[in-house]
Image 1 (cartoon, rainbow over the protein chains, first blue to last red):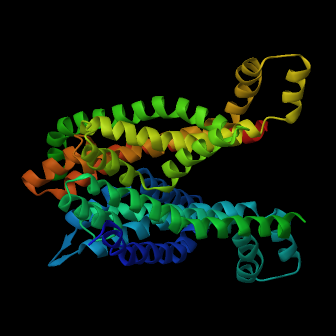
Image 2 (cartoon, rainbow over the protein chains, first blue to last red; image 1 turned 60 degrees about the horizontal axis):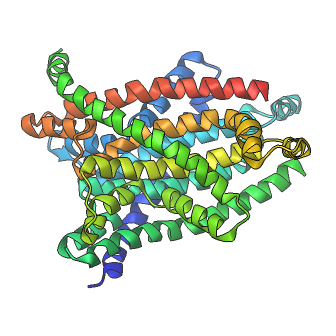
Image 3 (spheres, chains in turn cyan, blue; image 1 turned 30 degrees about the horizontal axis):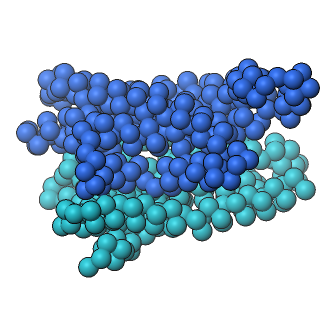
Length: 214
Length: 217
């Protein structure tokens, strides 16, 4: 088997990890972002500490904690489960911070105008603030997704058979000069995979600028 | 309570690991930032070859996961007869990472300097080096400071990946202790606290700087 097909064997797992963690993050970050911009100071502080703690600890530590540290009765995480949960929780924290920035950057007048129109608070939030905030943060979300794609490589350290893991095992079986190939290929593959997302981010950014500032 | 007693016993061993982590982070920042400055100038250069080289170094350093670059240095290059100690490989890989990320931030900082500053320097007949080092850089670097602090925190956290190439840093020390006593939950929690104890205050300081800069901008 050549190096490229060895690396490609890990591609479905890399995509599975990235997409699952991203979905967990996109959904889970919503309540946390609301908490981060809550008028209740205690709730705000708790959410802030949670976000800063999750971001202050390297991903590899979270993965090892989940994989080796958690045992409830007979339940233990398998490597893929630990990787998805770990990357998912980290995504929740990062995306909540991005959402909060977006909510804060919606001009205050929007809130006041919605109030003046007598809109309910939930209508104001979902129909006025969120659509505008989402436009503002969509490029940052796309950038985060490319970061998450790269961070999914850390799952190889808890023996998840994704792309980097597959490159490692190919390199071990080929002690000759050929053994460097999988590392080069996998590096290029990550860059190629993030190109569409980077392109999307740039076009979203351009559209957002037109929509907001035109 | 039990946990606290165990933690007290583990702490000295972890601290030596933390020292190695901080050392690697320090080296990669000290080597990476000057290199990042060079790269940021290269990327803006008029010469196509220089610009392409700069862009390639930056895009690979940012686009490939840090773990892949670590493996490339530690497992890949020896196949060509270029072998490094694990710590050296970690420093080299993370320096590349730091250089690539910092160059983008510095480039944005340098670009934010008003055009009139370039024109005024030219009108005064200042040389290129004088213009760059005495006029553009001091102004451009100011706005890059919070971003560079963020990259420094990212680098410190990135040192945990050096675990994968058996560098005796914080994560590796924790794993060694854990595999002796099977107290994985306790030891990785303590390791996490050690990382957070440095990253969290550093983040708060960065946010403070960001806010201060925003006020003066």
